[in-house]
Length: 129
Image 1 (tube, helix red, strand yellow):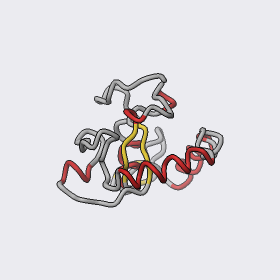
Image 2 (tube, one colour; image 1 turned 120 degrees about the vertical axis):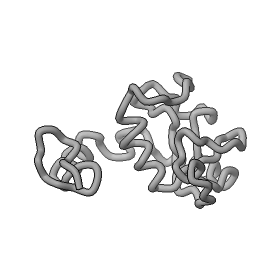
Image 3 (cartoon, helix red, strand yellow; image 1 turned 180 degrees about the vertical axis):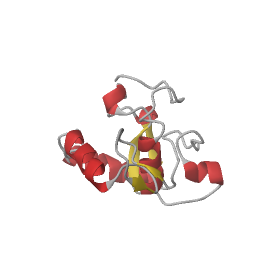
């Protein structure tokens, strides 16, 4: 166990934030639609995952060891979403396929809570577009 990731909260959690601070963070993020994930994105995501059905698979068919724990561990896991390897909030392109990777929900959350949350960690250089 460790302390909630929201300083100076002293609630012990297995990982991430306590329920109170997790809810606050979700409210600050806005809804999926407010963040740009609209009907057009849902259609695109479905098509991308049909073409790239495995967690960690990029648009060019390569497997992304940096952003997918499944790939790092040698797992073949069905994709459940399309991840922006460089988040839109950090300047990543919404529609540039070179900025997309199929991901399972666990890897998507892991990446958001580690790589995306810490700008000093390595990421890719796909920006803009």
